[in-house]
Image (cartoon, rainbow, N blue to C red; front, side):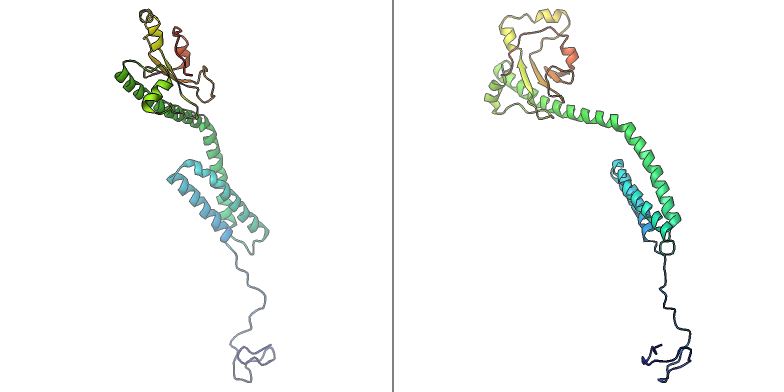
Length: 245
């Protein structure tokens, strides 16, 4: 073996070298020293903590990122099983994997049960955005009526005043406008509608709704500033109107 001080070759087992260096212990074994790696197991625990914290701080839907925790903890368990001398933390990784699987199952059940509510809330937001656009048009119609004494016959007359076309609904479809002013001029008797308890409507704004087809039940309809479902509008007496062309 070589002397660690001068590098001279010495016999194994001697107590000192010719250079005066003394050996205070047996030479170290040349076999590599194995230290268990806890990185994979600790990484899975850290990822689980991050996913939980982010989900609580922002939105519960971010908890679906638990799939990353599942992969990380499964990998840590696999490594610890295959080579326990090099990789430790088997119990920690296995516990993390079990907790993540349980939490993922609960989250999945929760998500599936709330899908209808989420879709309904989305539909409500879409309709609310369309109704807001209709309220804006209704205010312009009222301004037009205060100025000219009646509602415009069609959108072309309204555009001549404000220089704008009717806004689109949430689904990027044009909002339709119809005026009942022409029906009054033609001699239609509004009192006949009053006798059966229905007010005479002077204008109508209509959106085709999410299906993009007019006349279906998902239409968004405003008459004189009030919203009606299409099923109720169909029950009202038919009045000849000036359609928007």
